Image (cartoon, rainbow, N blue to C red; front, side, top):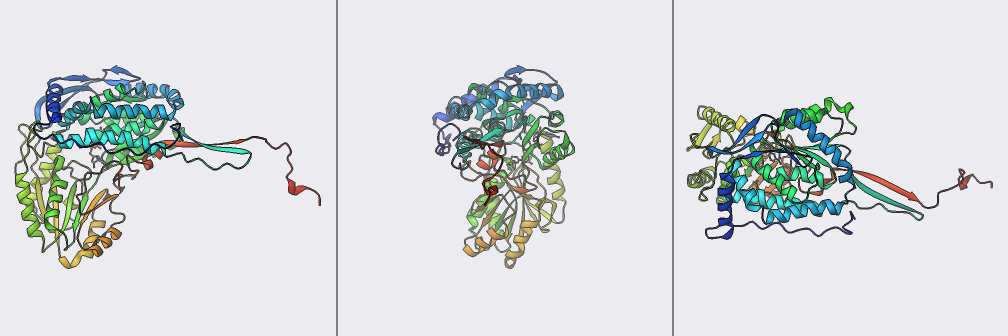
Length: 542
Ligand code: NAD
């Protein structure tokens, strides 16, 4: 099928390098950090394969060292977006005619280049621009993006199961690209997602206007260079930097908008959906809307849970990458009898977490993405410190002088419906509700009903009956449910990722489900000897 002749075998996940002292990768990454951090690029839009520096500039700074200017970027707005749409549409017929195997080879080459010469550049850009530690950058910008590229090619190669053909005819199913262009809008927090959203659509033959997050511009710039080095033809992916609203406005106004591949906050996705709905009669075809959005990810512990494992999962799940993973643990439900032991272990772990400049490899945490995020989180902390229904168990080490540092914060609430248990904060603040041990059942209802989101969740228990009960009761509460593990760290090809309810359309990035959204199948029937009379045999005389 799809002109590889047969489905490709599933690839193996890219191994995570250790960056241990003395390792070759550590030395290479340090060199890349110095190189990437020592340049101030004026990042161009890329339209039809040509660099374009148009529109007012904005600055990209390191969140953990905001005096450190990393790049200047242009806000493309409506004018550049119009050029991007035109370039995409011009490239569309040629890309649609390009055999699948050729399109796939561009992604496979990008994966190899990223596993090799681009790896540390993209890791360094992700560390500096998004304040990820070496490990967090490696599992994102290197491994996860490599996995997306390789696994998507494999999954796409399995898609077109051909229909049966009766004697005298041949039937076929052709996986056409969508008619028009796909708008990919990507978030700041994962370089892998930013790279996956445009390439997943492009793999299926679509042309793309890609709008990266302003706060991920540096890594997006290097990602686009990677795609070009891999042979992505001009115009297939056109990147426009800047504010999302203006770019989206122009794309939604185009009759050729064929789909939106979005990852980011729920409010923005709902606005895009609304915008498409309002213009629905103006499009050539119904745009496909795929969005992976916010989360309020839970951890629920049964009285049979292992206390040590639970405490570690909560600390890692809530505070890695400063709690800025869509899957981060942000609300927990712990049996009251167990809570003092869990709390004490967590406090000990939290006090040992080092936080600071990510170029210092001893740090476990960096800074939150920008001042706006810092201000929002500091506002929450201040309100919680005065709230009778909440108690800050620990939450020191906040500082904004050098970088946007939010100390890992643990909060106990007495009201299980507290806003802290409902709203996505997107920072290192974890709310815990200690429930009456006898009320596991009622607590499962709370977990299910408290927040509008349904992205990830985790159950901790050793009692098999309790696990089975929770898995059943929480069927719609999470698109990715973990048992005795933290709710973060999904691996492409192993835990297809995405959630329902307010968390998105659950099209599972990096899987066949997602790729199917970017194709519009055409059925072909060929009859070898067509009939030459109108009458059917049953009409014959007795
Ligand atoms: P965001 O919604 O602020 O921005 C995402 C993208 O949308 C950016 O490119 C931004 O420029 C653009 N944008 C902003 N306003 C827009 C508008 N009015 N019209 C069109 N585009 C607009 O999100 P973020 O802060 O970059 O990322 C964090 C959010 O993403 C969190 O809510 C997180 O849960 C979510 N997220 C979800 C997943 C998932 O798989 N479910 C993965 C990563 C992040």
